[in-house]
Every structure is written in C-alpha cells, then in structure tokens.
Amino acid sequence: MDKEAFPLHFLVWNNQYLELDRELQNQQYDIERLDPRGRTPLELSVCLGHLESTRVLLKHNTNPTHCNTQGWTVLQEAVSTGDPELVQLILQYRDFRRATDRLSGIPELLSKLRQARDFYVEMKWEFTSWVPLVSKVCPSDVYRVWKSGSCLRVDTTLLGFEHMTWLKGRRSYIFKGGESGAMVMEVDHDKQVVYTEPLSLSPRDTPSLLAAMLPSQENTAQRLTSPIVSTHLNTRNIAFERNKSGIWGWRSEKTEFVSGYEAKVYSASNVELVTRSRTEHLSDQDKSRSKGTRTPLQSFLGIAEQHISSTGSQVSQCASPHNPTAITAEEYFDAEFNLNGRDIGRPIELSSKVQKFKATLWLSEAHPLSLAEQVTPIIDLMAISNAHFAKLRDFITLRLPPGFPVKIEIPLFHVLNACVTFSNLCGCDEPVSSVTVLSPQETTEAGQTPPPLQCEVDPSVFEPPPEYTTLGPGRSEPMRDEDDNLLQFAIQQSLLDAGTESDQGDSGISVFVTGRRREWRVRYRPTIILT
Image 1 (tube, rainbow, N blue to C red):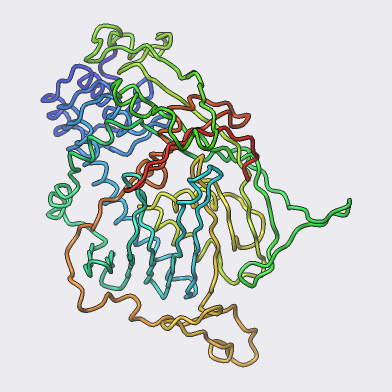
Image 2 (tube, one colour):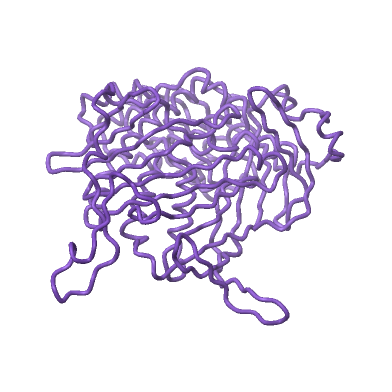
C-alpha cells in the first residue's frame, strides 16, 4: 500500500491517533480527501469504530456533515456501529457544525433580502395522508412572514414531531441585519423567553457553543434503537405539463383562482420519493418491537395481515472490530483490487422504497412576489433547521414553468403530503395591524408606471416584547434533523413491515400512529394513485 498517497487514512486504519494528531498539527493536509473507496478520513474512522481517531479528526475541524456517494451521512454510519459514545460524539460535532454554518450563511441571505421589496405574506401548510387514520392526526399551520429591509420575522405554531407527538407552540424567528452587525432571535411566546445569537462566532465562543451541543443520553439511545432512515426527492426526470379540464371530449387547459390570483395548474410527473432504511445496528428485540401483532382495530376494520418478504441487501463486511482480518489494508487501498462486494463495518441490512408521485403547482404570472428575490431567501433561512422547508426548497429550486407558485402540493414522506399556499399578501385579504399597504401615489413619482403591490412594515415587529427574558446563545429545543421530524417514526415502522418495494406502486404499507392516550397499529394494502 502507498502510505504516502493516503497518510491520514493509513493512520486512521491502524487507529494511530496520537501520531494522527501530531501530523495534523505539523503539516497541511486535505483532511476531506477521499480514499479509493470514496471515504474521507473521518468516515473511514467512524466505519471502523475508532473512537480515538474520530475525536482527533473532529478536533481538527473535519466535516461531520459529510454525505458519501451512497447517500449516507457520517452520523448514520456512526449509528450503524451501535457505539453510543461514537454516536454522541458525532452528533455533538455535527450540530455544532450546523450551528456555525447557519450563522455564517445568514448575512448573505439577509443581504439578498435587503435588495428586495418589503412585504408581508402568509404561507399556509396543510399536511395530508392517503393512509387511513394518519390523515386524521395531520395538522396544519400558517407561517406569517414580515420582511422589511434586512430584517425578517417568521411566526409558526407547528414545531415538529417527536415521540409520536406533534409539537405545538408559538414561536417567532427574527433575523436582523444592520451596519454594526446582525442578530438571530428565537422567541418562545409560551415561556416568554428570547434566545439570541450573534451572526458571527469569536474563538472564545466556540468551546461554550460546542459544549451546549452535547446531546442527551436519551437522544443517543433513541437513535440506536431506531432504524436509520434516509428520505429524498429524486427529480432528475421530472416533467411539467398543464392540467386539463372539461368533459365530453372538450378539454381546455385548467386555470383556478388561488388567493385572488388566476393561476395555471401544472402537474409535475416522475417525482420519485426514495426512502431507505438500515437496521443492522438493531437488536432482535428492537426489530421485533416494531412488528406488533394484529390489533382489535385491524380486526374491526377487516384489514388483512401483510406478509411481505424482505429483499434488503446484505453486504459481507470486513476490517472492523467485528472482523478485523477480512480485508487487509493493501486490499482496501488498492483501487484496482476487486473486493467482490465486501466492505468495512457491519453487514448492511437495507430496505429501500421508491414511489412515484405527481406533484401539483398553481402558477400565477400576475402575482407581485418574486420567487427568486423575495421568497427563496426566506425558505433558505428556514430550511437550515426545518425539515419540511428543506423539502420545499429542493422542489422550488427546480426550473419551474413561468409564474409564481401561489400553491404547491408535494410529497414530504411516503405517507405524507404537504400543500403550501401563499395568501394575504401585504394584508390585502385580511388586515394586519403591523402592515400598511402603500397606494401608488405614495410610491411613485408623477408620470411613472405604478409599481407592484407594496407595503410598509412597522419596525416594532422585529423587536421581542420588552417583558420577555433575554438569554444568550442557545435554543429552547435542539435543532432536529430530518429523520426526527414529522411522521418519521411511522415511516420507520412501515418500512420494517413493508420491506423493499418496487417503483411500480405500493404493494403494502404498515403505519403506526401513537398518541399519549391511544395507540393505533394499522396494516393497510391500498390500490390507489397518489397525487
């Protein structure tokens, strides 16, 4: 093996963490370089279960949010080892990296907003599901958005999904940019507390922020006893076409009025929702816990049991604490050597599900808002710590047909859709006390064409109530990643029972919905077309 080609990887392979630390202090290396198998030094260390080398690499600022060519993150690979200390370490540094990236990226987004017209708009989120009973517990929320200069405020009441319960509360996220600096505030109206964070971190702030990101043992244990789930939208082959309306052979292109604006209705076909689940880290007890027996509710509804065999892949692995001699270093680092399907770490137990959806868009060419200049920066800001905003961002950044998407219906997970509607622009539908609509006479000079709808936002909107308690950096709740949001637990349970599905449709699904006072377990075999 050529040690000079991959010196850091070689030290990681042998867990020579003291020498690794000295090398990183004394020499300049590309710490994110990929080895012949596509792994960074950190990913290699995690897959091998080397806690000491992992700690050294994280101390030297290697990227804990890296995603490999198979679509798995460093954290997910850590969970697959089953080592709680390793998971806790990666989770801490991952959240720290997210926090610092979030702070460093906000000034640029606020700069983009500063150049756009001021506005107020409401974004109504309605969550729906085709699965019986799940749809009954799907909530809705209205995000209220104020923008003035480089200041932005977003109000929400739906915070996420945890322990099979929808998290509700009244929160405001305020982003303020100015000449002397910028600030992020999270306002918890229920607790009357304001968490503030400056948009830059000094070196002395780093240790305290890192310490604040240490996850709880409960959080770590929850990950180690749940499947590793990855869900993403595949839009490589997406196609847009106008919807038709009419009967008896007479068909015309469909238009509808949404929030007072005439909109053309489009369908986006070939939208694939890919959900993958790994379970190699779970004990037999954890796996069996998810496969409950037929319930009285199932018997009452006459729903048949589903017995779907798993066709998940098994990969024979090597060179790990479980099997340290299966692959040698020479074999691993030789790009020409064929491993014949073997790899490092535990054998992968993988179930995958691919479903094709039709998303629907209502596009208005007369709408005053600009998607690129006004709305996209807001969605970018919220997507940093909000899973369903991240899904929406992935979709609206596609090359859409002309017009502003006044309404969008997209799949979030394979049991959950989101319908987003923009309304009450500048408080024109329902008056908003903090917003004043400006007439053309107030915004134009004589002889000029009146500009699009404009409004003035009261500056007090961007100030939290004075009686609230103001705290330093910190959040009322830790930022949740995508795998913890919405109906993730229901998805995990359904994947365990449904196994691997083809992309030809749904051959079976199992959904578990648990509340504080009731538990529903439903196995359902639908024959439907998802839209």
